[in-house]
Image (cartoon, rainbow, N blue to C red; front, side, top):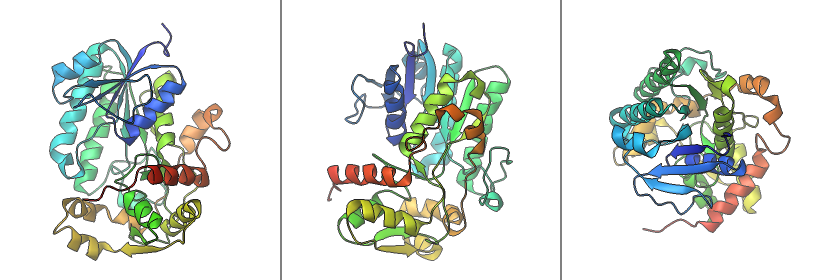
Amino acid sequence: MSSNQSLHVIFGTGPLGQATARSLVRRGCTVRMVNRSGKSAAAPQGVEIVAADAYTLSSAIEVTKGAAVIYQCAQPGYTEWVEKFPPLQASILEAAAANGAKLIVGENLYMYSEDAINCLHEELPYTTHTKKGRVRAAMAQAVIDAHKSGKVRTASARAPDFYGMGVLSSLVGERMFYPLLAGKAANMAGDVDVPHSITYIDDFGETLAILGERDEALGQAWHVPNAAPISQRQMVELAAKAAGVEPKLSAMGKTKVRIGGIFIPEAREMVEMMYVLEKPYIVDDSKFRRAFPETLKLGEFPTPLEKGMRVTVGWYRENPQVKH
């Protein structure tokens, strides 16, 4: 049976899970997405949605029976990482091992040291000092160790902040697009004039799909290919141009974020990660570009920022902010 005809199972129906599903559907793959409810209004046509508790190993094993590739795109709330993220991923990894499936994991870049953020590459050690960074580092190492031991074939795709359809909780998310579309200032944070690598969500999903079909990618971590780094100010200008509005922005420094954390748990969790918004944050994606040059398509992958912003603005217009 070809890989396209085989079952591909995605844990998580959030933006990354949906982007991965879109890439797999374009390939003609049989796709099953897994979440707690068994429902997802945004799933591509023809994709099966199944309810399961991924924290329960027997449930994770059952829902992945027959899978050729499993994609780990699920995560708990930002404030629950320490307690809930490691057991969630451990259960999915064990299910992949039990069913003999490849496991492709979506990760961020928190495991790397603050001292290295001006040139982040895959060979850097995991020397982060932050709480969430240490969680990420331990989880990333567990994926690598599982492959090295022969327990399960794995690969990881890593990306910085991302934007695109369905992406709300991000540097370039609802706090930027909704205010702009309302003629107000985008709410940014940190130094808005330092360069920052950013990933279009569909490029993240495409990378996961590529890693799932390329055995030479296994046993390694790969940085998702991105457009050239730009500042937050430039991001706002591109989004405003796509929306046909005036580019306005305001920025919170670490002190304001810390004060906000008194009332907002997510802001409190962000304080330790503020360094990624205060210094140049540059991701080196040359390893992927060298290994898989045939996947790179001018104007398509990685997605040009202007194109990505147009699509994202369109999505936000079609999905207006819910007023509470």
